[in-house]
Image (cartoon, rainbow, N blue to C red; front, top):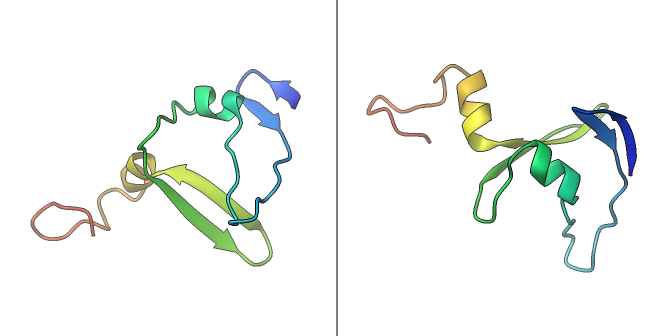
Length: 73
């Protein structure tokens, strides 16, 4: 793992036979990712793939993706 700053890093991961990756311990710690958490997988063909915790994603979206009853889609 290549540490750049306390709040950033670069690391390579391999895709396994079931197309799974392991989230490195440093990333799990930095982003407080726990077993059972839900992550959003977002992609752009030119820019790549990003993983974001779902609660952070919905917070960033300002509730735009909530139903009228206040629940997430």
